[in-house]
Image 1 (spheres, helix red, strand yellow):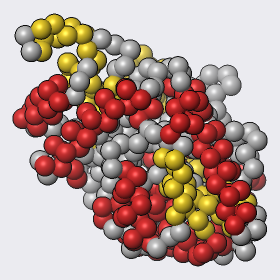
Image 2 (tube, rainbow, N blue to C red):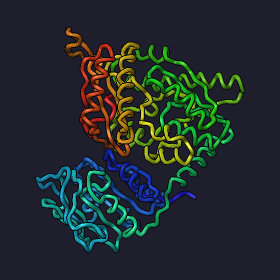
Image 3 (cartoon, rainbow, N blue to C red):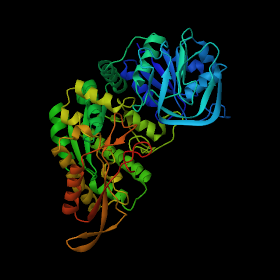
Image 4 (cartoon, helix red, strand yellow):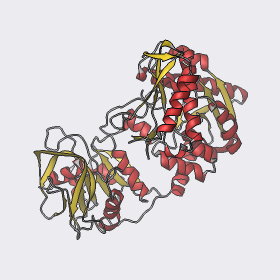
Length: 517
């Protein structure tokens, strides 16, 4: 029997899925749905509660995202965040207006201590605001429960109707007590009981794969990363020897990654592994290409062509058709590739927006509704070794999107050498666990003047991009010790030819993405 979800209605917020992730953290199953769903479509999912996300529009503008007014008459608890909060006010005879005063970032909020939404929270604490419009009058029957210096209606609730909302963003980590607010809504206003756990996720994922693949055969593309490793382990648990792993060495790997897959993963799982050397094929297809979107699409297409060839060879050895391709696609990959209801395409991921139209495989993606932390938890339940589960994420397109400019063997060797130094020194300093990811980027089409060996040089800059994050949807640059950064810089400029400058990227996400391309 399908679990009843807490539905998160996406009104175009790039990070609407973070709300769904937070709800799952609290132990409640959640799904993200588009705002154009009718009340009947929403109710067909048998929701236990509905949360309206934020969004960039103004509720009073023509054509702005809306929701069927019928949903308020279904008796389902509803919670609104930012735009969703304003939408509740507008739909239920409150008033929303542009006041001329905006709030962005950390803001102090004062709460009504009798509020159920803010039960057991301090009367004053810091929240995260991002709005230009404001609710200037709450709907009839609603109690105003929070305010800021400039926003008089920062939260409201109606306990009889089980409807509440907040102007701020409780889903982001920048504010205080966000999870407490969400928990108070789900447990104390909506009166829900937790129904979601890692064990349940794993059980459901295995069952879905068994149902989808049946007696068929599948191949899985291993990359050496945690996503493809966990996807492979789930599918192997579901269909056993019907699965064969294919590792494609596309020539865009970091030092030691092929060996890690061939030794560590096979040793942990006993999976059947085929290694395909496709360096020449990928580099030929990428020759002269500088546009990052084109790189991703080329790499996605080449992966499929390689998998098709590998599948044909496996079928020739044992003539049973291989219909299925397993991929470690995560939910953030889907969203950033334009999979959100109204979200912009930030970049096409090679395994989502980069797949060719004539692909013959049926995709098996057991992780495509999950976040990275959920995937790591599943890896632990599956018994994968810590060195795989805790490995820093590495993009499927590999070093191709860490070279800003055209790709060739010489540039790849420069970047590999610099990347290895950065990873070695981070590990030696014992700081691997404090960094989510550590991209090292080669600005291949940029040159700068330097002095090395008492002579003038005209070399490439290397960019260090260490970031800290919980989920890759938001991130901040990692404040690594200056001594460590200095050592990495010194080693790179002394040991890597053609590099005479090392710079540090201190941009958060947003506005920057984690990868440069």
